[in-house]
View 1: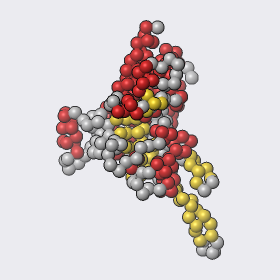
View 2: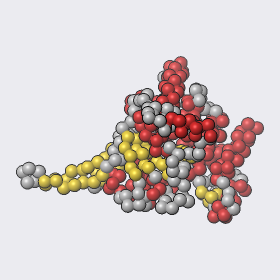
View 3: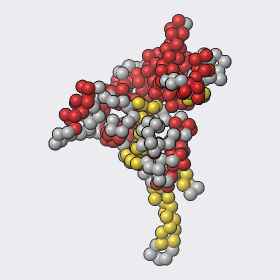
View 4: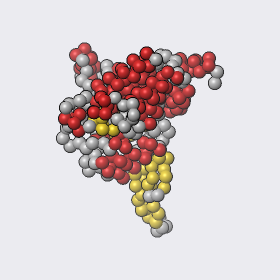
Amino acid sequence: MADTELVAQIDALGETLAEAKASITKRFIGQERVVDLSLAALLCGGHGLLIGLPGLGKTRLVDTLGTVMGLHSNRIQFTPDLMPADILGSEVLEEKADGSRAFRFIEGPVFCQLLMADEINRASPRTQSALLQAMQEKEVTVAGEHRTLGMPFHVLATQNPIEQEGTYPLPEAQLDRFLVQIEVKNPDRATERDILLSTTGVEEAQSTEVFSTQSLLDAQTLVRRMPVGDAVVEMILDLVRACRPEEDGASDLIRENVAWGPGPRAAQALMLTVRAQALLDGRLAPSPEDVMAMARPVMTHRMALSFSARARGVDLGALIDEVAASVTKSAAAA
């Protein structure tokens, strides 16, 4: 593809994304960073984990994204008694009119393009793990047969803080399959006032479809074609490797506080999300500032504090920000 054609396509996609964001904010007011990270996950073909207290609009956001992005969406309300078959589907034995019997597969709600996994950490680890193959390979195996999911396929899961009653921690393998972790916090006073006025009247504003399935797939391909400079690539590698306590060059800060660090999938996620971040900001290529901005959402759920660090109340997000700032400073000095 010629450079001029690539630039034109990136510009056109930027305009469409601006329209999509405007449509989303009709129902999900404020929280621009949350909207950007959710769109980034979809643009990169990945999954997002939204974490926040109940009542902050997480489910509303995912429902709105399904409408705006033109995706066939399903919702699963995760509960402690939910079983894997409730997600994937199962085979049933049917008797035909002639008396013969045969098994028929009934698809579960995972067979869609956008799956809303509501309160995912309220289900048992056994049920949570039913999504592992679906999230990584975009297919599921039921009764020995591989069944392909929708294209594209995304999981946007909501999660209550783990300290609340009735929750189970997500397995590390499943956490790693989420491209980004999105923290949904309480809105500021002005935003909360707008929410009150827009949601307690007789009618509410409705979002409209902006993308289609094919246009989203085209956008995902375009994101992967966006150029990334060598300096940004090296910064991504430096950042990910600096957060691994077993690396030779790891700082004392990491060695003393981190039990295990991010793997190669974190570097892959950063490589994709910095492109999406640049695109959402209307730029043609990512910058070191994009790496700084995406470090916490991409790496927080791919690292774990040591027991002593948790006992001291160390904030993992702040730790990542500190390492990212140090890496950026070193890159600028070089």
